[in-house]
Image (tube, rainbow, N blue to C red; front, side, top):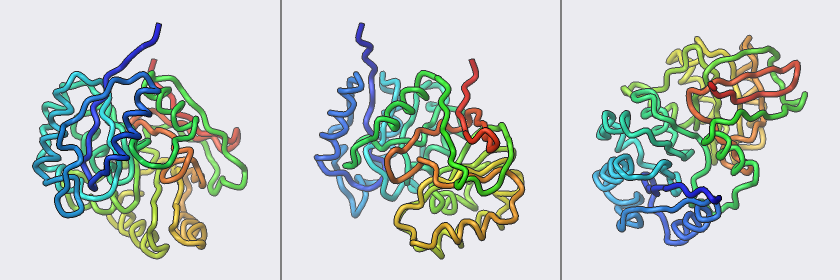
Length: 286
């Protein structure tokens, strides 16, 4: 029997075009989702998907809807306008999954840390790039709490080791932007994954230093580095320079971020890094 789920589409960052909405609906139909959304989802104010209040109202509506999963259409910019105004008590009680990446990093970490709700760093469902089959399969595995494992090439192991810990993280720029707020990421005792897109090499390096000075690497148990797409041809040199004195496991070039496949990372779930056996794994509590 075909299983249908309900999805609610949101546009909490940059403004969307109709093609993004059409793509999202087609993709969700293939995944057996019935979707709903606000009629003003394609609204625009400056470069954003409507006013901050429209986007806050949309988030709160998503968490009162009958949908099991909330999908962000695209990333962009502007979620920093929302995080102080969301109804976190409502979100805590709603038992829904939020899915997105890039600018959505702010919402994912704020909501997960304040409520414990399920938050997936994964596909923005309305992006124009075609999701890889591994992108889809990892999302479905995470949704159904099925363990999944990723093979690591020897050349992508920068620091060896074995560790098992909860996983958090996201876009480097957005994690840096959260510092000094009540929504900054908690990394103590965690594995942290990092990715970025279209940033100057030196800027990625400097934000990593900013996170370091803020103490965000002091208690980290492991590092998974995803794509640093369009961040300069020398980005690996800068990443290796930054992480050269780390003693925890560090692996590079993993399929997370602004390329395909973009594997789903469920914040707070158990992650295992085993460089001797050359894999990392998301492991759900049974």
